[in-house]
Length: 305
Image 1: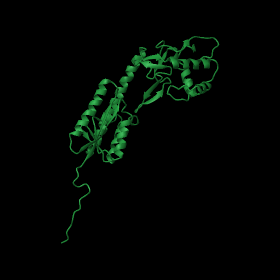
Image 2: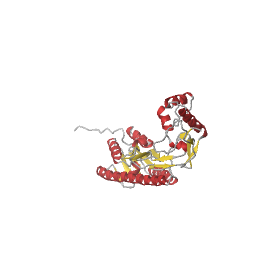
Image 3: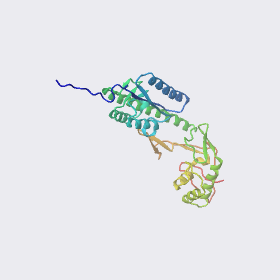
Image 4: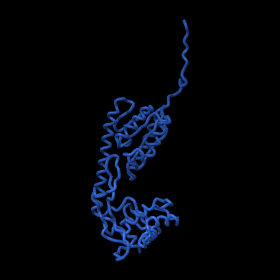
């Protein structure tokens, strides 16, 4: 009778190593949330260390970022790239809402991970994607997480609107010539304010927005974004910004849809105009023959000092 010899595989006798990764995310930069963020990292690091055969690949963590858009989560995308390289076999996540608050993106990522043989365990919902029947559970949990994100956004919008009604809300981003202090107040930046006054003065003397942009570029004055080149559209926007006379027009834009899309407000939403909300870079007046730029919602006029 013929003798059959079994040849062992290359992996025979070796310890089966499972590459583990943990993904953490907190939704704001508050101290409480950052403490939760650190606690998540510590918890998963300790859990992986306690299991023989589990090898920690990395702890991927996005801090203070939105969960509704995958393209804005740097470490999440880095984790997906490592999965594609075959570095990760299993991912640990606290909950579906930490993984994504958009059902479509959540399922898309999970399906891609499944094709690569990477499983995901969601601790809070007790869902493990190694079980074939859990995609429906993930879909339901993802929908709930998406609704939670929409609800949180609605609460934030209501809070912003009440502040705008009281004249407290100014801006989330300081315009050129200002900086934000105490997280809510605008303070003049003297060097930039001098440039702002030069821009307005040049315009009042008959210079075009294009000419002003060319001169600022030639002088090597950096724009608000830090770019060396000024653009005509940026100068025009600056010339129509009511904040330089100390006033604030709130809700110039609004978000809608899901994932949220920012749109310019052309009358679809209420706007709130607050006079004397912060220090002015320019002096208001009504010179009889000056060429004036007047904001569409602003009853006041300006001229350079």
